[in-house]
Image (tube, rainbow, N blue to C red; front, side, top):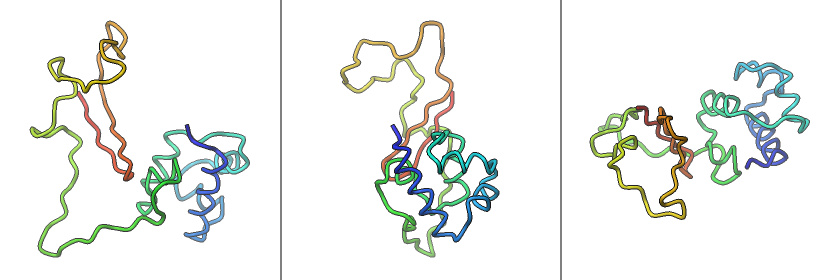
Length: 141
C-alpha cells in the first residue's frame, strides 16, 4: 500500500528537481490541475494511471522509488557501450521465458498452492510484473 504522505513528499521532490509548479507539473503529465492539488493536500490517493503518466513523462523517476521511497531519484542511467545498440524491451514473452498463460506451466511453491486465484470461467488476459529496480514486464495472452 502506498503511504500517501510519503508519496506526496516524493511528488514535491520531483517538482522541485524540475523546477515546476503544481500547475506546470499537471500540464506536463496531462492531468487536471485539481488532481495534483488533491494529491498534494492528501485528499486523494494516486491512481495507477497517474503513476504511469509520471514515470512515462519523467524517465529519471523510478517506479519503485515513487511508490515506496526505495531506490534513487533521479535514477542513474546504466553505462552504455558505444558499440552495443540499445535493445528495445519486448512486450511479448520471448521463447526463453515461460508461458505464463499455459496451464502446464509449473507454478512456484507458495502458501497459495492448490488455490485458484482466477475466478472460474474467467481467463487471464494480461500479467504485469513489477521489479524492485523500477522496471516491469508485460505479458499478454
